[in-house]
Each structure stands twice: as C-alpha cells, then as structure tokens.
Image (tube, rainbow, N blue to C red; front, side, top):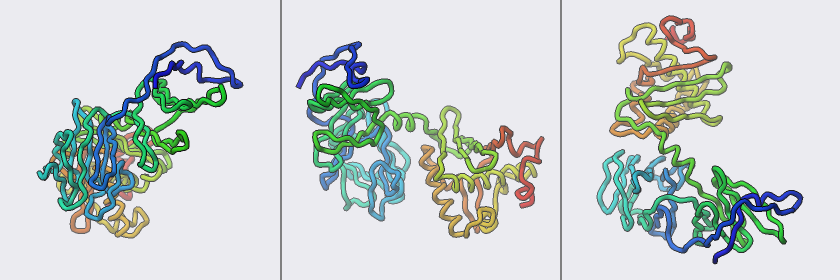
Length: 363
C-alpha cells in the first residue's frame, strides 16, 4: 500500500482542526520479511534482539529463561561493527554450533547459527536474521507478525500511522476526519485494528552498551559514590579511562548503602596506612549490625550487589566476585580506587580525616 503522508504539523490538532503541513512524503507500507536481529527457539518462539540484549533468569533480562540451570544473567547479545556478538556470562555455559564458548569472550554469530544455553539437551535458538537492529512493534500474544518501523513514517493501517519526530515515535490515529496524536516510549501498548502490540525501541539500549566500561582488572576501575546529606539517595558511578556506567534507583538503595559502608572502611584503612592486602576487610557480623539486618540477609544483599556490578561493567578475564570479596567471615571492597562525595566534599582525604565516621575509624 502506498499513500501520501503529511508530516507532524498536520497531526497537531487544535479543537479538531487540521493545520497546513510543512512537508509531504510518499510512504510505502513496511515490506514483509525478517529485519533486525532475530532468533527462533526450537519451540517456535521468536526473539527480536535489541542493540544490547540480555538472556537469563532475572526479571530484568530482556528475554527471561526460567530453567533452574540458567544463570541470572546468562548471555548478552550486542550489535557492533556491523555484526551480532554473543557473550557468555553464565555458570553452566553456552554452545554455538555445538562448540562451547569461552566465558566472557564475545564471538560473532550469523544467520543459521544454533545456540544452546546451559544444557546441550535443552531448548535451542537459531539465528534467522542477522541484520542491523531496528525499532519494531511486537504482538502481545506473539501470534502476529512484527511490524518493523521505518523512519520517518511507517503506515501501519488505513487509520494508524507511526511518525518519528526528534527522539521518539508518535502514534497518529485518524478518527472521522480528525487526527489524534500521542508520543510513545519503549514498552508502550497500542491497539492496531483490534490487536494489541507493544513498542520495542533500541536507542536507549544502544547508549547503555556503548558506555559500559570494559576491563580486564579491578584496578582499571574507579568507584565514585555520590551521597545525599541524609544518605537516603546514593548513586554509584563506575569509570575506566574512557567510559562510565551509573548504578542508581530507589530499589537499589539498600545495596548501594552496603557498598557505601565498605567504601568508607577502605577509606578509613587508607588513612591509617594499612597494606593493600589488609585494607577494607570488615567482619560480616559487624557489617550486618551496621546495616541492621541478619548476616544471612547481608550475604543475599552482597550477592545482588555483585550482580548489579556485573551488569554495569563488561568484565574480561575477571569476575565481579573479585570486586566484592567474601572470605572467612569477612568482606571487603577490593580496590583503593574509591571516592565518596557527600555534601560536595570528598570523604577520607588524608588532609581531612574527620570526614570519615569515627565508628569506621575504630574498626
């Protein structure tokens, strides 16, 4: 289907009146066929890849695999230099074309490659599309074909058009000679001729992948914690020599406060001149008392924090366990590259040891 489509000023009605367009396009309906990066499971499920796409048991993953032998973050797919890569982040491994991958070593995948997570006898995924990732409307019930979006305008039906303006998509619906428009964001659901679809965009995911630090040593990283005066809001910025990643959010404050306690212990030991091998260690029971929780809950919180750090940084040859070490009932943040900012001041400087809480200096 080909139609003439007038750009956004036409679809900004005031009291139902139409305005003169600034441009006019001749637009084709999306061509059939597979676009973007696409996997098909042995059970028939289709997976449309984002620029940066995670598989695993975590509810935060883009594709959730519920088997018990699957790791929380099992695999990462990402688009780079005109091709797709897969990276193994798991405990039980990944096989591509019956060859087991080396952990944390990305390899390119192409159309017709077969991928198996964890168990070679488990469900497999076949790459059926290895094209550049694109924005797409996906059917909620997965029974309908995807609608691949083409900028600046995609005609979806006789009454529905998607228009890309500035940094995002807008839904434009024709209703009895008038037009209704609203902006869309990633994950939004819309009704198209009685069928439910949701929008999957790639812009944010691409920026996330682009800015993730990639390191081979803990010493390559600097950890900066920015703390509000009441310590109710904590943000973590992890940087290497070129890139950075930010960990923040209301749901992560308990984990970030634990990290803050460990960071302050590192700073306190630095002030006292402890050797690197002895710096930062604190007994798990004492840390639990500081947090006001049971030691077992502290272990759980440490595990979740490790996972957050693993998600924030692309590790090569090391594991997040090397950052948060737990040994013989003690735990530490295993780096001296720590900065704590509170009230615009840097804590733990040798010239201002009063910034370090006395309770930590005494530990």
